[in-house]
Length: 427
Image 1 (cartoon, rainbow, N blue to C red):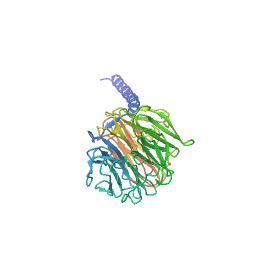
Image 2 (cartoon, rainbow, N blue to C red):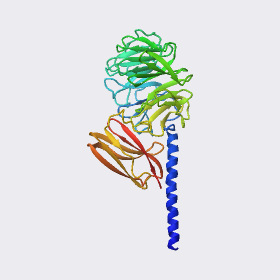
Image 3 (cartoon, rainbow, N blue to C red):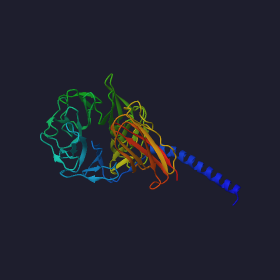
């Protein structure tokens, strides 16, 4: 083979490699756009899920109707039943505690409230003073009070971590079905009821007054920020509370059954609906887009946002789904709304084969967790998991041994926030 022929072959090979990289990058943009609205099924399937909870240990708890409570310690990849002492396996809601946030409370359909003081390993009934056994909602306030919303019994309140309960219905109709409770940042408490609208208490639940949406079947509430409260209703869509005139304005998803609302660190609002999957708003509820690709069950009953950016959805019959990629921010790092405790740079080179460098800076002592995920959200490598001093760090990631070509994400998490970036491995 002569030298000119070798040169032509090498040139063509170089051109083909460059074209491959361009094609991969173009494909990545389309795939990533699709993945913003894509879900994957977790291993917990074929069960109805009424509630999801992220614990202080970053574990995920799922309250099911008929199978009790499940726990995942690995981002939803596997689940275990944790029903020791839980005599009623039809669980309607979950909440962290108030005086001790490591405690977990579970509301059941018929046997009242159960409490766990060991992360869910065991449960004990806590029903002293609780005269209504069907618990639809639970909420804990910073001052130590825990509130329970019931079916046909209104609201009960505990000031001793659930040991005893007392009726707190002054101003409420005694037969209220309380689907949701929201403790606002200003310590006001809101109660969403089945047909009498939303009630508000400004004195820790001692008394209540109607706050709007009378004759509306309100199912869920969320506070996006101190000045923004949203409510979702059965068959009436989503409402926003105007703090100036205390009116609730209808803002979207009309004629839909809203089951739960959630908000992530970027301020995006997510709405779980019964029959229409999940919708997402990135503009404070002004417009809504479908967020249901890959969600095989259109009956989305509950949502939870993990601190690592993943969003989980519990469904009416198909268990728990997880967003394909972390959505910590609206595709770009959230700089203005979070403390500037670290800076995570784009890996270099990118695309890479087989190794790349990931550089970051931290500006305070902090635990640092740097992990790699594939396109399905499965963790494939942990690069850093330790407490680090302020400074600049460079981590070299070699994927030669265990990763195939494709698109990956790396997530850095500290004490106060997390951030995710994308990279392409070319093989």
